[in-house]
Image (cartoon, rainbow, N blue to C red; front, side, top):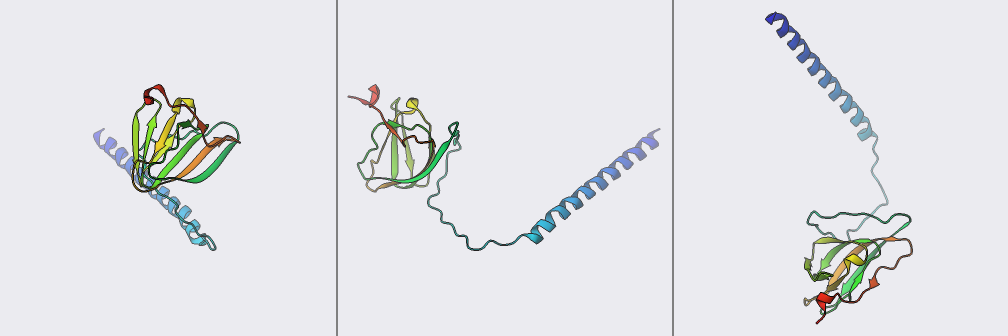
Length: 164
């Protein structure tokens, strides 16, 4: 009985190897024709406007319904401020130059330097102010995901923790 079991295991192993070999051949044949038929593009160019790296927390949730997608450049002069505000939609920002200091409604602070990216969440629960405390302009490249027709931001009063 031991010998018969060994023959069956060997036969199963041979079938597995044959199945893998056939699957590999099929995959190769499926890929090769598409590569052979690919044509290079022409008349297309692109420019990277900004590149930033997130800290791994980019959670994007576009609004429901029609969405305006807008890309803007924002410059904040040294000593400048956005004023307290919130956004009706989510945005993704890349700091191209300078260092942006954001203070949130709970008075926590986040500093984002050139080459970094971040997301700002929508709604009055996410009130904040952006400041340039440095000596060079802060340049941001921002992609907004806004409900159709919504403004980029809505002015808000400073929270209680920021007054005084």
